[in-house]
Length: 295
Image 1: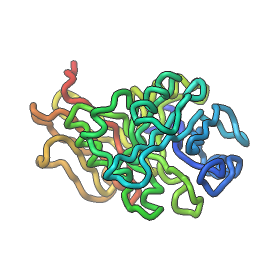
Image 2: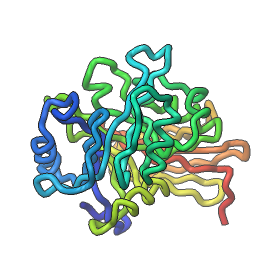
Image 3: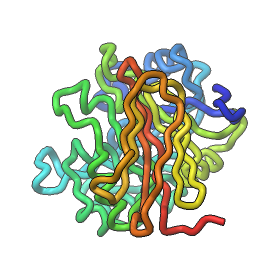
Image 4: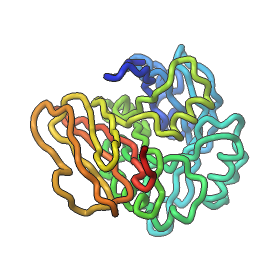
């Protein structure tokens, strides 16, 4: 738990990891100990087709979770990995189903259906815009870089989806498998909740986008009329992304940058931001819907 630069209490949360209950290399108890030692407040244990209820492991809070995956390994044929987070009971999902069936099953149980690592899965905006009920997606997935695919970052998918009106909450997490110093305790969200928040309140905060995704840097994005402002911990790069393929002043480089602003055009429909610290660690904002009017 930490207090951000505006005095808001935030919880450090990893929403995607695996254990020896599926294809992870540590037991649930070992995994929880690693994340507790690294200062995490909550993790979701999301083993493949293995639902774990909310509770505690070794003094660390566990949000209920599972990962349901279909499509094998050929991205050309449609591969979907979908996290079930915060369900109030185990979703009754058969293995021989479609992606929409998985999403519907998660939502019926009060959970958040998260599209995992869309870049790794080669998911397209055209595919996912046909799906209803996706509650969030991963903009960054650590193991997809630390493993063998080298596709951890899903910014292109996120922006292509936003161009089609799908502005998902943007999560960063580890998807930990190996626990080898490369895929654990690296990417997470800082959720604007107190430690007493219920599972329902945690999910509501994610749906409201009351968090930022990060590997360490602090990042806040604000809108006032047509001006968009980033405030952040010291960074070497601040970048804005929208449906504009180019616009002046959208990437600022320097040293110890803590703020940057830009003006949006009337035809822009969304905008988000990323920052990169001197050590290469990044943070990602959620997306602001510019179609919504401000007071």
